[in-house]
Length: 188
Image (cartoon, rainbow, N blue to C red; front, top):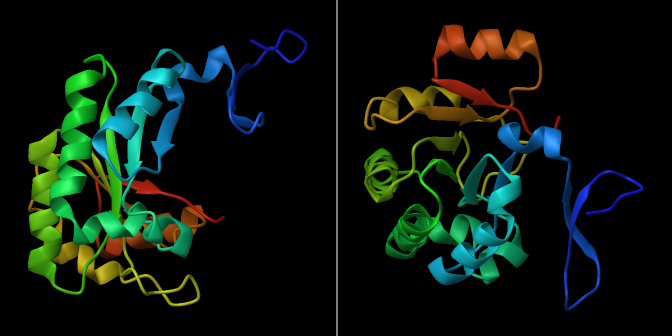
């Protein structure tokens, strides 16, 4: 605890730098997103912050090279068994009141996207964020909103759509055009 700031600070013991900071009032609203390549590391990280967060999310969509080269982010789309183990491990080891979710990306093959979503649901994800771009797509390319229609009924957990939703007007446009259980805003 950082008394002057009233924050709960997590400092890396190795690098001696602040890696995460929060305040008690945010606990129930705070979703802690992990970048991880394996279940044991994910569990250690999640348990370290579990008392100060409302939910844990696994990033399975980051296309940045540091993430993919480390087997994290979008690399997990190509290793669904590892992704499933991460979600299963978190669900098994975290207290039951802490939801486990993940965020991933569309795949060029709708059936592969569906299979991945279903595997994450079966593994214990209680909601799934779905970025409407493929891994190689850049932010300058428009999100592929229409693709959600092909996969949105394949799971029973909420699908949280993401991609080019920066304003209330865009959110209304997306929901009228496609519809999702919820929306995620990023980069904006």
